[in-house]
Length: 234
Image (cartoon, rainbow, N blue to C red; front, side, top):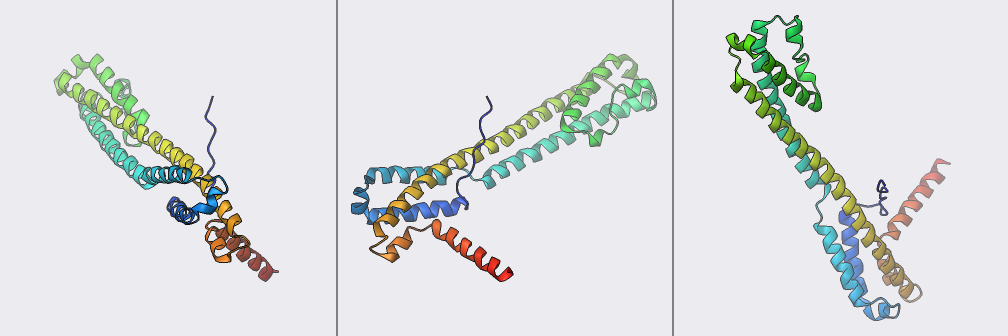
């Protein structure tokens, strides 16, 4: 069964979420006596801090994209090396057979520079197979097993680089999902702390109440701005 897509429950940058969580933890420590009356222990707060530390240590998307770019560069270089090795074969084939003949066309190297990665890998292996079957005819133009081995080795290197690149793509998807899962967890706990804090100070201290409006206050500001814009437009 396909895993259900995870939705991001918080509408802010990860760095801001982390900062808000640290501020909420600081406030909850200050108001520990009051939090105890809601059954919210300092042990739970400590666990929350551990969750936040884990979230902060997870690799962000910049790191994952950087790794992905490095592997893509290596893959592209391996692809170019394979094309060079294929051209080394086809130069000799062209000396023996005209490029309009069936013997030449069997190699399937037309538009070599425009091939997709899978097409290029498939082409490299086909070139080796077809050239080996005609190696006796091509011997007089310098075709030998060493030249074909270069193509074979280039195919292996390219395939490995392609697999590594795909692995990094999947790694990025997994990292994004893992960070989102952890972010949702700490956001849920942040909301719990803020709700308790606001309830504690709702009728006692407006300043302290507002300190727990770390996330909600931003939403309220946005709503007010939108309302003013709508009124101005009307």
